[in-house]
Image (cartoon, rainbow, N blue to C red; front, side, top):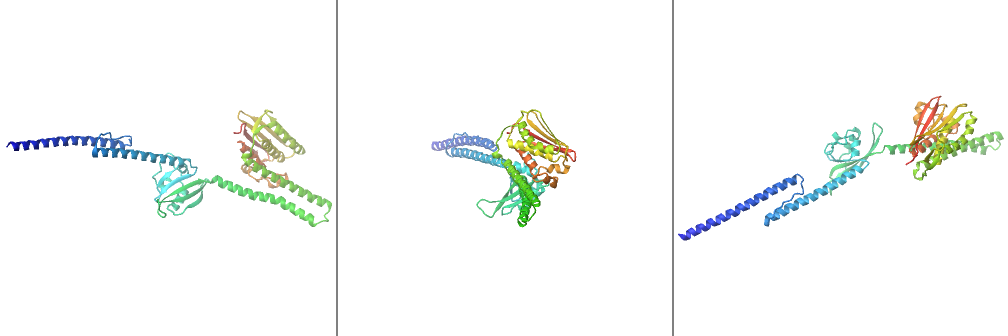
Length: 427
């Protein structure tokens, strides 16, 4: 009997010990789970600095270490992804072209601010995730992107907007990694090439105009030379008249070439050397050159300087050319017995040159075009007075190179006023 009681007691003792150990382990597991839940919530709320601080051995200890390592790896990965995303955004922002990436369905994945501006989207609005059909407000751009979306070749096209802005749109396919035939989207590059197109047109027009302007005097010279060669018995007066025409056309050709070279020199800003130029002294050189022409037409040539010591940072030849072109034009296009006046004044920042005449004036429709190369209001009259059609274009380029501006006020048959504004200090 005692033996049975001892066995029973031993069984009970072992049961109690197992129960106590089980309860203790359950409590430990519960605490661990509570901490695990707390830390996992913090991690889910992007508090990636949270860690499990449990001193445990065996499997619990290993699980704790693995969990902490997982959080650390996750934190490092997210940091790296965020850094790369920041880099990508910075790169996209610094690109002067409009860039957007779309998936195969036309949903926007990435877009920079320049592209938002071009597609007329609010810069503060988030368009990532939206379909191009809703995000792009410019119909012409939307039509091009929709046409080439999903294409497996590089596509490039030009479009002209209603405001005459010219865009070059390039659509490149994006392939699934390590494949050559599975397209997952497109990269669209939108470049504003308005200025480039204008320059190309200007260059083309300039070449055509130069060719025409050079051809005219050359044809005339060639024709009269041929006539003189084939007719040895031409009387001296006729021969002298032909030679006079050849000389006149040669001078015209030389003036034209000189003006073209000057225009090219002005546009080459790298070779520009600035110095302090006294305006009064420079004008005096021009006045001496033009006084004879003014007297021959009985034109009253007046000038007025607010300060004869007034200087500007510029190139001497440039300032001389501005005075010469504007004043010579005023004298040439003012009838006999007229008046031409040059006024030079200043304020703290700028210098003003006003050239005023009471000549034939400029038609209203021509005022905006008189600074174009080879543009003449009256072609026949311009050639009669020896104009090359480049004088005002040269003047405008000089003033623009000095960060200044030129304005015109004119009334037909009443006269014109050219107002030049040049900063005292050229940055």
